[in-house]
Amino acid sequence: MGCLFSYFFRPSANADIVETPRQVFSWEREDRQAIRKEDFILDKLKDQTIYRLPGSINGQQFIVQNCDNCIVYVFDHTGQIQIDDCTNCRIFIGPVRGSIFIRDSTNCALATICQQFRTRDCRDLHVYLTCASQPIIESSHNIKFGCLTLNYQHLSEQYIAAGISPWNNTWGNIHDFTSIPDSKNYTLLDQNENVFKHIPIPTDPSCSHLNINDSIETSFTPFTYGELYRHRAEERCLVILFQDPNAEPCARELIALNRQADIVLVQTKSYSINEMSAERLFSGNKTYTTLVNKGPVLGLEFAGVNCIQTCQQALKTLISTKFMNLPHFISQSSSDAHDQLDKFYNFASMQMFA
Image (cartoon, rainbow, N blue to C red):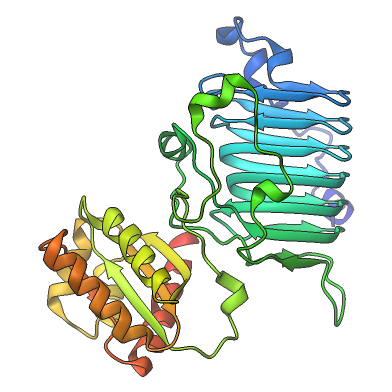
């Protein structure tokens, strides 16, 4: 395609040719002379463990390349990540404002929080993700994806700095550019395959104050089953919490209560709904269409036996005892829930590509 376009859009002899400027990395800019290039590029390392603590990267680009049998921890937010030609490496990367791209790497484990994720020409990877958009693989084989559950000191602030919401995680909704007929180049891991099975928990004293743990109960990004539950037939329930300081705390406690009752969290979304979409979603109920003007809503999809009744009772208890007057919506029947969930996710997709 590149050749075809270059043929038809070849400039004339008299045309001015405008060159695309080369990407300028943060360590090359004049206003960043104090930044050392070697702090942001790990190159040709072997059998080493490298730490980057909060505040050491501070939103800059970071590169890992040509490394073998290394363990890398970046407990900070970054702008963009590139991983190339690595073998037998274990890598954790904190919230990434842009994309993380891993290429030509083998037998590695990677855990990260990002806006975009992509692999090319990789094989035998374990990938633990919180990803705001659909993860992409290309010419890659035996890639195992899991939902990243993790928490450490300053992680919540790093999410904000990277512009990422813990409630928008499409970790298992993989798009494979080079799919195989009647087979897959990737598999999805369940909640028993946590991140520290494949990336060792850091033991260096410099990390002790971070209180790092991978517990589902305390994870900043909630564990969601996502695509693992796509074809399951259990009853579904949609809960929407409208903009309010107590919305997220209530959501986390609702998730915990439902987990105790064997009700699973399938997916969550946080986005702004316009009044026209709200009118369709809430069947013209003016109370809800007014509430969406306050800001983004937080939606949670639950599944399980007697899911709707269990969610209604749990939410009623929370609002009557701890989160009084929290504006909310909850499904009233199974048939309503399926229609509402379809609309809620369709509106979310429209918002993403608007």
